[in-house]
Length: 210
Image 1 (cartoon, one colour):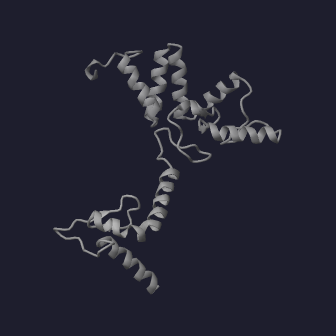
Image 2 (cartoon, rainbow, N blue to C red):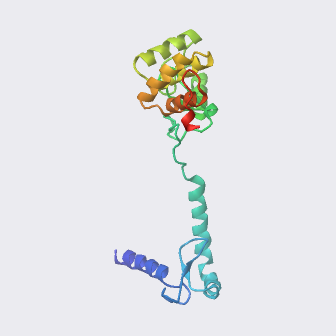
Image 3 (spheres, rainbow, N blue to C red):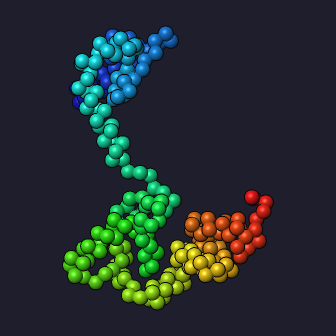
């Protein structure tokens, strides 16, 4: 324990003074970190060059570690949330994910493909990767499932129904579904509701916010 504490103290001391000459930071001495590894500081370019032979191996090792940390760092989640299977952020390009009608969960294409390969290889019935509900065999069955999701106040199912009504130019129906989904906290529905007001489709155009 004493050795660990003394080693930690040594690292702290090196960060507080020039790694080459030992000069402490003061009003007239400004220390600058090594921009490759950020482990040590120097008071001048001369000290940095003189200390380079001793620091080179450690510097390269730490610089490689920093590059790996940056390369493999998990991205922050986006407004679409995370894939419920792999827990990685969904792509902002919604064409790279699949919305499951049975549970209204967006599954990334990678997990959807992996599940299809597993089921095909094992000659199993195709099921939702998340809730394991059998995949709808027809469009009519998918629509029945979607209506059931709407009946239990699923905001995602309501938003999708709003899109369908909008494509059919049933703006009153689209407005009703978007409004209810927005009240239930769906961000996508809120956005599309704002577009309806902006474009004046089905509602009076909001000219004050143009």
